Length: 237
Ligand SMILES: Nc1ncnc2c1ncn2[C@@H]1O[C@H](COP(=O)(O)OP(=O)(O)O)[C@@H](O)[C@H]1O
Ligand SMILES: [Mg+2]
Image (tube, rainbow, N blue to C red; front, top):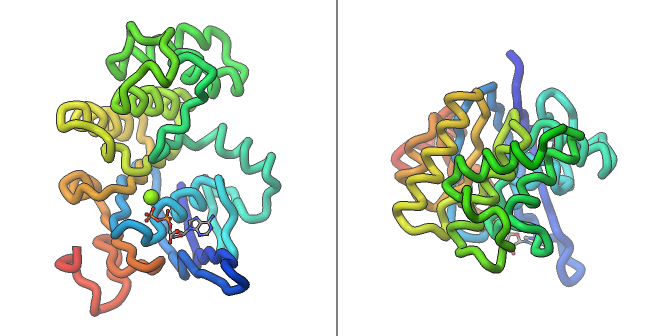
């Protein structure tokens, strides 16, 4: 079986005050093409850290990540960036739009990095898809949190990613915008077969994915797909 994402014994430690602080410990799972997967857990449990490692934004202390068959921990920073640009869409918890670029230009960046022609028109179409057709010339500071989140979504879609990571994609949104964003995420999954990996506090959103994993203190404590231990049950969710 081919895994779009395979994570094996992933551990991340930081040294703080001369001592090692382990924020993620021995996490393992595998996802196939088109899977929808969510990671839930309390604040500080390591969810953003895990997502960053899976997407090749950060390096693990030990363990391995294979993204579309490529083992990330053997790659240089530049090689990882190339893999990300080819396969990955990422929606950051705090959007991370480039402040000196307009909404349109922010969406255009990944298209230009791929050397695609007609990137302005493609970016405009993506903005229209997230309901921001008229806002392309606005800078991030001129947009509300919800609008920035949707620009971030359009940018993540621009790569036509094999796998899309979204870190609390509805965390800053009102109910209506949240529903739009969720619809777009699952549409991309259905229409393009994009594997979806969500971090969320919203258990209703998590329940829309095929598999829900709960982490606490950096450890996976339950997995609705494959039970980690007999003690872990879906009721733990
Ligand atoms: N660069 C860092 N240096 C030290 N500790 C960090 C760093 N980044 C994150 N942490 C710690 O790792 C833990 C997990 O953080 P994070 O993955 O952001 O959690 P979550 O997304 O679940 O809220 C937290 O205790 C956080 O303080
Ligand atoms: Mg987080």
